[in-house]
Image (cartoon, rainbow, N blue to C red; front, side, top):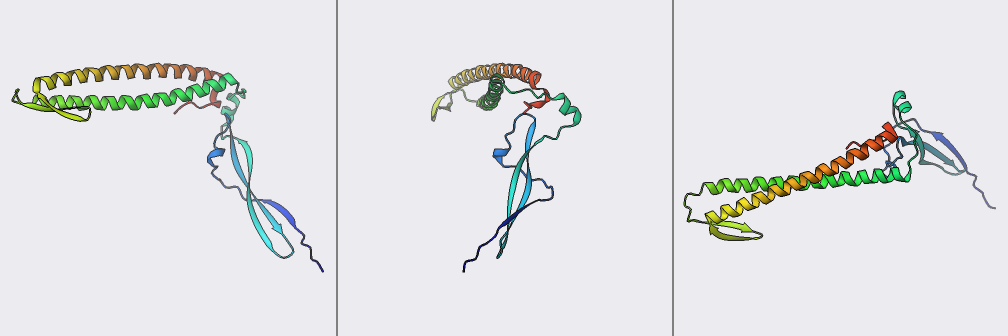
Length: 193
């Protein structure tokens, strides 16, 4: 005698509650976002009863007001638009890197100025001063140390100025791209960081 099991599947919606999406679901096109709607699947067999939870992925419009929705454009993203967005992203990363380098150079310059103030406190001009070049300390006369320090400070000023110019140029290009992209997509794109 053989027994057969009959199986019936019933889908019931669970009460609405927010579920945070995974990292892969956070990447969304322009003004649409994906929200998860939980669904409960109940399987029944003649001998056992099991509950299998699952999640159904449904696209929904983002939480924009009616005015925002009407002002946003449903423009299709072309290859050129995507290239501009990618270029803006790479420029944004470049600016952050340059700003970190700029902050480090400014810190180095402050350190050099502090060393210069310490050297002014040395009373005996014939005294040898330990001056670090690379990873090695050298004992040199005070006048030579002050001269080397002045040269290092001038070089730091030039590097800071060059980095400032680079940051300004990259920011100008970013502002141009931002204007183009906002003109094309309106509030459907967010380029603020």
